[in-house]
Length: 155
Image (tube, rainbow, N blue to C red):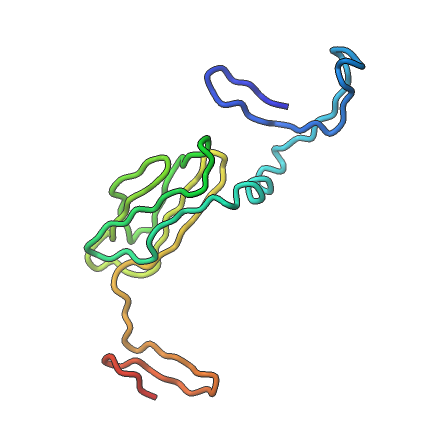
């Protein structure tokens, strides 16, 4: 079952579950439709799982990076882009977004989120700014601890 709109895309609102072909039963033949509105989230997760946001895994303070929608059919676009507070949007379109660090001191985990025209929400995560590698600790299988201090590993 399809809802047709003048000048807009058709929207599938049901799937025939059972019906009598019109040539056998005429115009008033009974048909049973399964409503899709209760299944939208499941359908989107199963059908649109291959669409991704592709881009860098690090956003440095002095450069901008572009993230793009990949593997999307031509009729799927991004309705809205959102970002974490540690990045700023430079430019955006229905298939990509260019961002930069929000300040020279911005750091930490960041993300871009795309809400698609079919309702699916995608998110891509990355690191913003320079990582602090001082005092990074590694625990080995032998339960020995090593710490990075001043560029040197020490037990």
